[in-house]
Amino acid sequence: MTTPFGTRLRRAMDQHGPLCVGIDPHRALVEAWGLPYDVSGLERFALTCVEAFAGRVAAAKPQSAFFEVFGSRGVAVLERVLAELHEAGTLTILDAKRGDIGSTMAGYAAAYLGSEAVSPADALTVSPFLGYGSLRPAVDVAAQNGRGLFVLALTSNPEGASVQHAVAGGRSVAASVVEGATVDNSLARERGELGSIGLVIGATVGDAVARLGLDLVTAATPVLAPGLGAQGGTAAALEEVFGAARPQVLASSSREVLQTGPDATRLGDAARRVAEELRP
Ligand SMILES: O=c1ccn([C@@H]2O[C@H](COP(=O)(O)O)[C@@H](O)[C@H]2O)c(=O)[nH]1
Image (cartoon, rainbow, N blue to C red; front, side, top):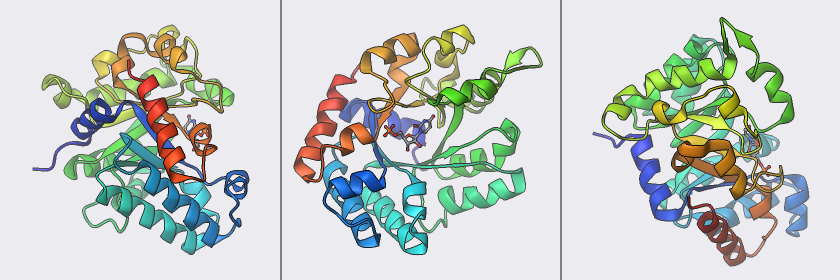
């Protein structure tokens, strides 16, 4: 039987520290690395990231948007990045924030998490704002294949609160997302393990987790926490934001680490430094 994503993530965080490095080939970064902003530069940038991070961090998170910019040739580079990280045993989280009505969601699930996916990732970011239930096909396909999801709950951007803190039926939208993930992680929780249905909660959300009464420990959810570095989040802030749930948190940083390139050794060393600083 395939080992569930949550179990594999727990092991990876224990071994390497709770850092997920984002692979975000922004135009400004690619050019700062002295590379042309075209498919050849994208490929050089992305494969340098693979060389730097493979086997050295718990997870890497390619940002699909920056590959899609280059059309099918950019997506081919993304597929290679996912395959090479997998080969090296490093968990991949594809940040594509997919979300649609359930029948279309089944297509996205097959594309990224299915047993016959061309370029599968270990986990996919998804948007629950068509209703948590619309994610059901992805939850099921992930479970069948030992893969996972990270569901947007409290995003790191300031605009997110206007939707995610809104109250409907007596609870906040974020609380209903956490409740959905709690139910889907119940088997893992009973086994004392981390679930495979994670949440995205920014390192920048201040006291929102406490204020909205989100019980992440009972939920047994892994938490992907973007916003470190460039968006102002810090290791100290993680303690304040997540409290007792801190051991479940996989912090994510892209630009802060990537700006130390283009030398792969320096890049990998920077990621290692941040990962050690983040250990709870
Ligand atoms: O709430 C969210 C969800 C996803 N992201 C993504 O994470 C990285 C952040 O990059 P930095 O350079 O570390 O700021 C980026 O790919 C976002 O799309 C997020 O920031 N917030």
